[in-house]
Image: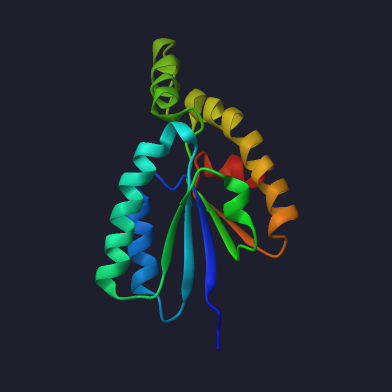
Amino acid sequence: MNKGLKIVTIGGGSSYTPEFVEGLINRYDELPVRELWLVDIPAGKEKLEIVGSLARRMVSKAGVPMTIHLALDREEALKDADFVTTQMRVGQLKARIQDERLPIKYGMIGQETNGGGGLFKGLRTIPVLLEIAEDMQRLCPDAWLINFTNPAGMVTEA
């Protein structure tokens, strides 16, 4: 019998998480997820609890045997994961505002995927993603990392 998969989502308090959970529910027969760990930082705890509660209700209503775990401890969550997804915003929304406003102030484009704003976000994000990759080598060396974090091109290349 297949034990099912363990997926860890870094940035689990994101507003994108319910759509991700819906996809897992709709594809449960092809991708039997046993455990979904939603991980965030302490500053994102309230959002994580709100989004996590919704995810649990979605899974319960769908009747799939998937357990949703909420965690602020990335290492605890990563242990023995099969897949790790990232959808995080280092610096939270406050940083996004700066990423978008600063370039405009100087007559340049700026948002999270390109221009000055994309560069700013990449410089904040890449070191954290590299830490996650190091943690994965230690705690779940056979896991696949799937990156949804912008600027996706720079982050994935790093």
